[in-house]
Length: 346
Image (cartoon, rainbow, N blue to C red; front, side, top):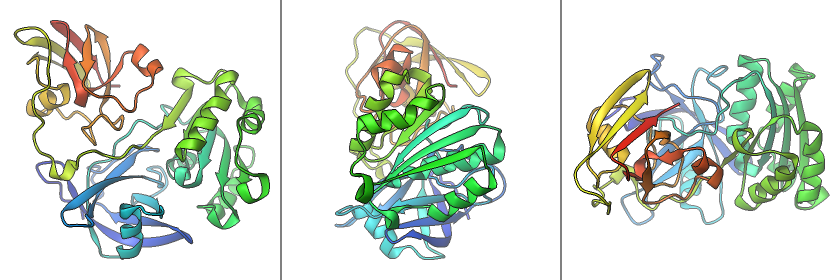
């Protein structure tokens, strides 16, 4: 069941609730086999959850399934102490439940499944990593080294599935477990020593903020940067995209409209761009199917590349300086600075 509304929201039925660990579940959704709900390994879904005091809240959860091995998409949710969304879903979801979901989005996904991958996951950060693992092993000929940190053995999500995958793909998947109860908290020196033999790999990092900071610091001296280092950061959404109100016009310099050329899905569009209108709003208004999720500058789902001209961003909580230096911007926050701008979606 997947009925998209005019706003792009799908109403999905939960086919199955899988208990992955004592504090984590997976929701398996029923979707039609028509390609309307296709996704890439490592992407996420944004779910509508009833609010604690009425209304609703939006929460992002990564897909742990693979489009290469699974007929139905699934997200995996780990309880967070004090976390309203994760606890409500873990306590209330059953087979047959209906959930409002935004289309799959996110850029934490490999461009090819044939490379050499170093994957670092902490706790529930294994969720998008697991999607990548399954996809590489089934859809490509890549080789994977996974370093997976958890509090204790009981906390390891997908422990059985990882054992089975490693046994089925000897030489292509190596799993290194790090347990805090045995080895203490992961530190930079130890992670660097584990990663050093794989310094020519492409790295993907996901987990709690402190883990990702330590992991990124450990990888930097080994030359991991730019297109060889991917870090998935989820930030709290300041607004609810399911109950979105129109944003007030942002301040912008200059007079008259700018002009933007947009390359997307094999087509080029040339549009007048009002100075106070954000790029994503312009594209959606003109019927162009540009990707997005939060519309608040808190995720990278709407990221695009500036190939000519200049824009300014109202807000950016997700892109690193290296991304900005490479011309990557968030369409939902971009305003024109120059009279002519060229934008491409990859």
